[in-house]
Length: 277
Image 1 (cartoon, rainbow, N blue to C red):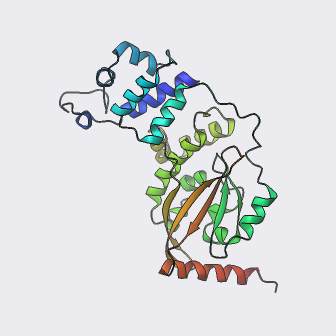
Image 2: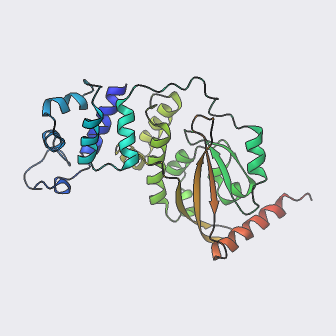
Image 3: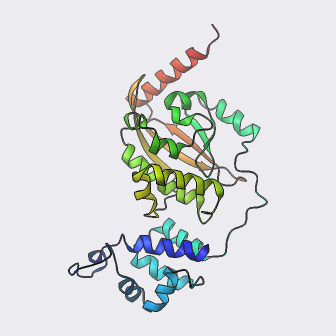
């Protein structure tokens, strides 16, 4: 599997880089949208035959120097370069780690008692919501425990009216999924999820085949909430130590901003709705 994953990644990234991006003339008829194999090999300082073996999965032991040269030509950033090295390395074993769907009682207590104006969720590496506090579920139905956020993002059309920057967030979601999964693409749940979304969503398929990898820990969500209106929230993604890829995602608004006021309004409405009648 390692050789195939490495080859798939190299091919996908090669097809994204335009000749003019690396100082080559763009002219002439080209069968591929990006660089030719021989062009990438030449720029990386390796033979075309050797590069072909890498892309076809027939050579699984490239040196770090070769990988760095390929990353330079492919214009990979730091996380993407690290992902390239991981694909070329030995498979990772995580047999001693806790089950990915187990959220500790302490973590559940923490997120339930988190600051009253802070939506918080816990995700596993497949982007299933394992736990969330009341304000998070009031903010978006996608954050109910048991929901897979990336499946909902591409198959639930109502979310496109909730998230004003849906296009940007969908790109981040797919790149984030690849970062969470890493080299373990043969994981049964990942295979099932990717297969389902590839068949049902051309948008997901287009983004998945790019092989973008982004473990970015922060971003911005712009919502048009049906109850309180438009809000701009920042989010931070925090890795949970001792788990198999679990993340805490915390949403917050700039203090004193209109979005902070609306988040406080949503919190008050949520607390009122939960009071005993």
